[in-house]
Image 1: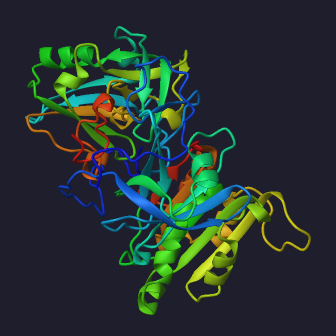
Image 2 (image 1 turned 90 degrees about the vertical axis):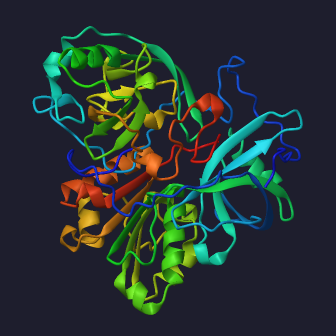
Image 3 (image 1 turned 45 degrees about the vertical axis):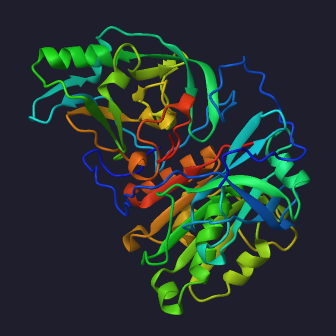
Length: 208
Length: 265
């Protein structure tokens, strides 16, 4: 075990062309858009697609695809950071802010909850604090670079939480549960960090 | 980052929940190095206090320059857990930052920082009975090789309870990593290996000469009725294609686990 990094003799590195301070520790910039997922890409037709928020008391609110599209859209341009080390700058998305959806759920009488767990086609889940998905930090995104989001990138819709490692930005998202207690999701139960802040390099369980 | 199943299935099989201490960076020593193909190179590492790994897992490698600049990449482990050492097979990318250092500069006796093992889903253990379907493209063979090596080290009865069919797609015969070892392992009773070459094949080549398609998966993979555990690893288009074909053939998406690499420099 080492606290002090071991110097790789003769290693100089490529020195990212990225502006200083834009890459979190241990990341490198890519111009591609790599795809990572643990199973086959699910395909859901938009006519049967819906997005649901539910609370622990069993109350829920549901939007069809058209109803979601009718809500105000944001067009965030953000940097994204994958735990597998790539970062991609200035990615352009379109989606509905999670603030908007949670406000509507609250006005429908759903309990607040301090945590959310996103659930998805294909069975994937990921957990986040409400604080991490509100205040303009998270979206249900359905377009990337001006075009509908491709299935391999999570289409028709994915969660977008760019300030955390990208496994939190759940692909093929279909809803969130509002929870009083934090409940680890798929990768969070398999050795990955519970929160995943790239700037603190919270990659794996046990990282500070 | 998804696994299969319908949208109501939120129960994860084979789940290991643990409270792990931090994965520390450890300075490993290169104890062996081997050129596998023109582009693939294997480094065998002795990692102090290595906690052990399961086949299919990976490690992070960190290179730190004199001035503190660092680069990290992830590499799949090629060795079986029983081997004790950690073998990484690295594909050398011409314009890469880390892979040329690992392939060209590091030699036996040198140190390199690693931490791991990482990943708990794309994993097979010999106590997982049932047919095993391993489909690899290019350097995506590496974690599947760890599974095959783990299988080869199991008791004969265990091996027989988990017969393996592997399909390995490479561009040319010279790009087939671990070719001799695969041919040897395929002589065993419970292992079947099918090669397919997508770019060019030598004279007299008896194997397939095309990209993996539905017909091939149907002919040399396990039928869906056998409920095999499927592991698919390779570049993204390869994995997207093979995983979709398996689902179209009737395999349960929840039993098809994937790992997609973009090449990492």
